[in-house]
Figure 1 (cartoon, rainbow, N blue to C red):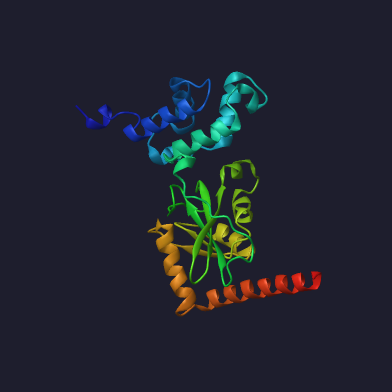
Figure 2 (cartoon, helix red, strand yellow):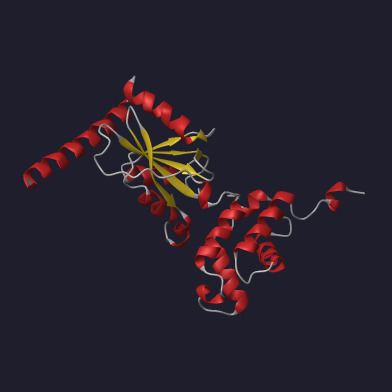
Length: 246
């Protein structure tokens, strides 16, 4: 008998994600979610196909199935759908598993720059610019690395220009790391005065930033020297302004 014929229409990992996603959404049963996904993605579903699911897709499909004009009236809610999409994308970690944010006030870390890290899991560089679940935002000086913010990207789905929305989300950063980023998206990041760095192998964020830290002190490349100069000039302007207030 042909093995391809006997192959299950959905991989085990994908089936687990679909089951967990259904559980995350009130009033949604597993058969109902699976049916909607197969209508969108085809009968055979794997982890890569689940990456195509968006909040907008779920909102549209569920409201269409229920005959509702407003997706928030179907008893699921946007936050539940966002969580379901995270699960379908493979984010098995809840918010409790994310690294702890260090309280930070502007100017508190002299000689530092702000760095965004695209992440799909925990405190790792593991995300693509256009699909990462969140950006981890670090303040990095030659001596210290602080996680100062975690920024969710799910609302990008409701923007007409998703890449521009994501670039503006990290618009206060000087540098951003991604596992991957396309040319047009990189151009939008650069227009926000952010230097994009593609690191396909990814890895623990603190290890990536430790290498960045070393570059700050040993032999900064021209692009980093420019960033360090801009950051220092901004701090100086803020300092002068505070003097005038006194």
